[in-house]
Length: 79
Image (cartoon, rainbow, N blue to C red; front, side, top):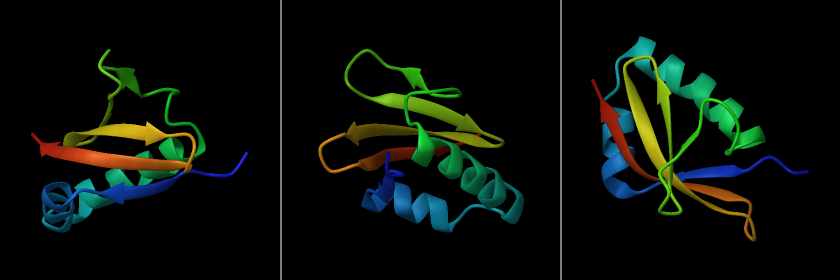
């Protein structure tokens, strides 16, 4: 199976651009895991067709298009 492409909504993309270097590295590692399997660990179903996954310093909320093999990140929150 092909790896999923990951796209960021505008607000999530702005937040991603503002991440510190350690957070950016943690997010990159998460993206690599999700691209292979967006439904496996550490993904958690939100029961509304969206998923969430945490990385060191934050988490992303996303929806998946299996037809287009794309993960659309709709929100990125830092803690």
